[in-house]
Length: 351
Image 1 (cartoon, helix red, strand yellow):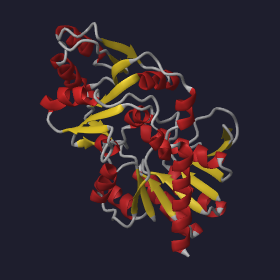
Image 2 (cartoon, helix red, strand yellow):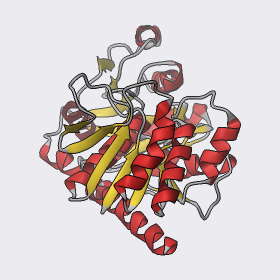
Image 3 (cartoon, rainbow, N blue to C red):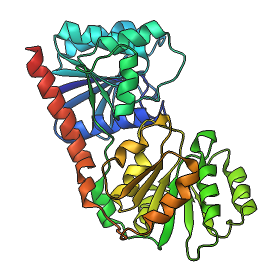
Image 4 (cartoon, rainbow, N blue to C red):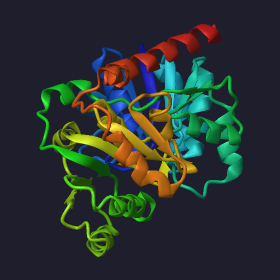
């Protein structure tokens, strides 16, 4: 299958989780044997419009003013003659350029709309970007609802979650045993204070330890809060860790607690659940994390912050695991297959 990816600012130009997700999808499709070309603004210094990165072709649409990107994409797509166009939702103007190019090439347009795209876009452009694609893919039902608020419909939207490399879990040795793990960038949205307050209620219970993964502007304040709550000796702040070390922590942990206020897709929670952790999720209005533990025996949802300590304590009554095979459905290969199946279905519908 020939797949054109309209992605104005791929990594390393963008560090958004949504940008990283689309990069992973494009790479996985290419690794699977599909002919994938990414149409982007060039950031490389070497001569030439095209560059290959990890075997994936990138086409620099314009080396001149970035505004020319939107006018040149449609013609490039028409000449490329793809079977499907896959576009990032950021910026919405690029979605419109991709739509025109897909229309000229007479192929479907799929838009990957993660939900962390920059704010401040003209609502009219957002509405057009939400209403023109053949399908919009969101990582969660939460984000699917948000896209529909911009003008998409139930029929034109689909949910495909983030994927993980399940084989890395199996081949990584568990770390030391601990009762609680938490991971997030430590900023205002991380809401780590709710977990620390819950753990303070459990300070008289012997034997538990907690590990906090992540760094950020609020780390020092959270470390101070842990000491003030007299649990500083039981809560370890380890900073950012590479994936293998995170997996080791999760495989050694009994419970993963999710309290962040904003999560389009709770990727670290997914990794932890696949590593066998019991998931305790504090439901937040701007987070989809609760979707990963709904209808799961090893998942608990909390609506009242005052009940978080009780949920954590209850989670310890469940048997310890260091791998949960039921999450193999989130393996990268399975998720890539969902994209391919979607491409084929919309291709048949378009005929």
